[in-house]
Image (cartoon, rainbow, N blue to C red; front, side, top):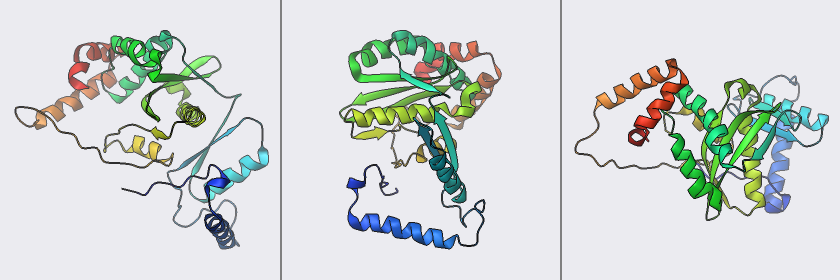
Length: 266
């Protein structure tokens, strides 16, 4: 388990010695780049696999270029978003969850090859959790078209990232980054102390890498299964076959499988 990351949100959060280490490290890294071209990456690429999301409310060419060059030199990547590219907003009606988000979730679950939750599940989620104030849904749109959505749960000072879904045509703009940034900012402004990125299967390396890119700390979760006998290999084989079938079928197959089987597969 890794140590909790140290974030630089407010200069008042750091003492003099920490600020001095930051400045000394920066000076040392700058001296180490003497004689190197701006396009040459650092040895070891210390930020490989990391993405810096830059969200500007006003244009700032010098800042954008400086951060972009620095991230590339460290082996990372950058993502630039502005209000002209994408808008994100909180869902305010049941339809935002049960229709708009449900459509995105159906497309996402089909790509993943797993059954979607029944529509009734989202109707009850709205009625019993989100509408009373226990959660929220955020939607991102480009040119008036909703391309991504996320569902969050709120409890005792913690905001939990529960579901995320997106339209394939909008993935190039990384709308999920914009949604998470909006959610984190809202959580900070409203006094939440913890932002929980939710559980992820150990084998889902892509999603784990995405979450680690936000400076998260992974913790192991232990589960116990109550059954007459251990699950055999046939269960895993059935899951692989079902995944292939759902991915190769129309969306109604994913929807129908969810209505029939989600209670057993969740």
